[in-house]
Image 1 (cartoon, rainbow, N blue to C red):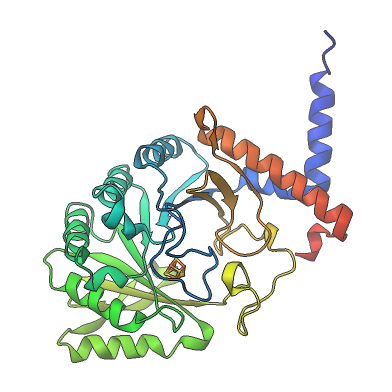
Image 2 (tube, protein in one colour; image 1 turned 90 degrees about the horizontal axis):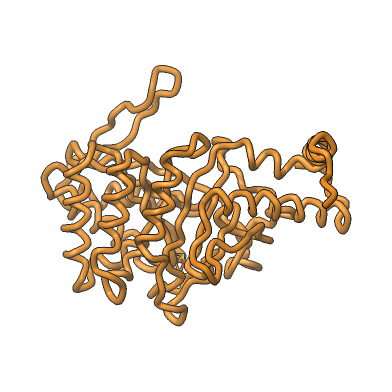
Amino acid sequence: MNFIPVSIIYKYLNWRDRHFPMGNILRHTKYVLVFKTTNYCWYRCPHCCECSGPKNPRTFIPARTICSYLDQAHSDQSFSNNVVFTGGEIMSAYRFGPADYVPTLLNHSLDLGIGTDIKTNAAWVRAGFGESILQDLHHVISSHKPYSLQISLSLDRYHKNALENNAAVISRLAKMPNTNVVIHISGFNNHVDMFPALLEQLRSSGHTIDEVLVGDLANMRSLPIVDDQILLHYSKGTLLDGGRARGMEWAHHSDFPQFQFLSADGMSLIAFDSAGRVTLGENSGRKISTKWHTAHGPKSLLYTRVDLVKATWREETRARLLQGWRFNER
Ligand code: SF4
């Protein structure tokens, strides 16, 4: 059998990384793991970049698979030590998934010391199973380091009753002892008036809201804190034209979203979904993806990352040949 000399392979890889750098960037940036645990959601918001809804399959990425990926990432130097659990609506596990799905994931991740963020639409707060969710969240939060869990809620006019649901979740958690948690409220540029309205609603229901300084000396900022224990962090973003948001009046069009897989702090987002795909970036536009699930079961995290680098290289080749894309045009 004839072998290609190793020196030629290295020369080829160097040439490829110089002229097609996106795969190289992906290989060398720290990554955040995102698990889109299900594509089911009882809402069907007009702007949903994941096209989630009540008619989508009621299936979840198994908790043992996610825990295994967290264990693999935990011993990987390139892992940013941050994970996001999202959907669809992850809390729908309380309706038809394993009842311990959410606490299993949160406890496993926090026990490993991973910065953990769970995104939810908060609409469960008035449902019959809402009390179980609140009790589980309280148990997870109070049995781990203060402020190691972040709960992310959306505050905009696309999510039905968002203001009332957010206020109810914050209010219920604030009344529980030792609930030191960060609640990240995200909105859109054209709905920023809703955050002051949320603070006002909390005040009028009897909660105290003070300001605390957080961060280090170089990056200090003031955040509202509810009843001395729930830290609120508000951010606003631009609506992107992916999924059902395509063609919406406010949606921002992006010509080459397939290369926008880096977060604002320069980390790559690697998102696993419940259909067995793993994608760079969280939402919008043409995706760079591969499969995390094969006929033999889940691939290892290492092989999944290698396959994503290969897919990125193919995508850059396609964009250059068919659309004349150049790296310095980013
Ligand atoms: S935006 Fe969120 S709440 Fe709305 S349909 Fe999509 S997953 Fe559900």
